[in-house]
Image (cartoon, rainbow, N blue to C red):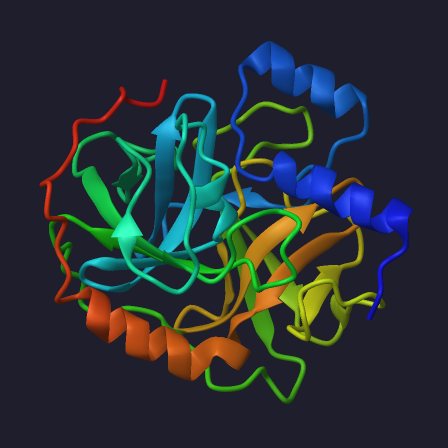
Amino acid sequence: MTLSRGLLTTLLWAMAWGCAAPSEDEGEARARTGESAIRSGSVTTEHPAVGLLFYDASWTCTGTQIAADVVLAAAHCAFMAPESGYGVTTETAQDAPRGMMFYPNVDATGRYETTGGIAVDRVYAWKRSVQSADPDVALFHLAAPRKLTRYPAVAAAPPSSDVAVKAVGYGCTSTGTGYYVKRERALGWQADLKEAAINYQSGYTNRRAGGATLCPGDSGGPLYDGSSIFGVASAGHATISFWVDVTLLHEDLDRVRRALTTVRSGSGVRAPLGEPR
């Protein structure tokens, strides 16, 4: 389906801010201009598989462990990372952006902790640029495994009834501040989420909430029921939020997940650029 130029521009702009985690002053300025905010969300210390994907203090995303050493997130968390000269070749394992880290632990207030951080050494993406019509999905390989009792799995099909799902992310709040804190918002699959009127990702169904839900830093975060992942946060602005329907990639994701567990970076783990603030 063809997008109008205005809507395409809006969506590309929304994705461009989807992972950024600006300073407090920058965040407040964006809030005043009507940028999206997580509404009706609450701080959580649950969802142990969901962590903060970090490149530097200006660029963060959210990701979900689906194996001891594999994290599911949005492709633009890689190809838009501000590493000079970095680019993504689709559907092949390659070095991750230099210094990218995965911080899965939070303190009692839900804020990320730098203890337990793991370097990200490889990435396999299905999308290489904002303009591409491919699904905004990628798998990130951890340089060292992090073992959990149970990992969420990508569902083979979306829910057939109005089940409760949650959007989880480390993005900002309605004031434009509050980055690096894990938050969740409960949504009804049929009551709150609708198929987008415009499908802008090459046949992959996008779902939207009735109002703003996603905010910078939430990109890559799961839309799931605690065990089955149905969507990955891709883009949003003041009135709409989009998740990629990852159930359509179920078999591919499982195949690549298994392959990535055998792939290690030939150059070793590269040093981080620094920790989040």
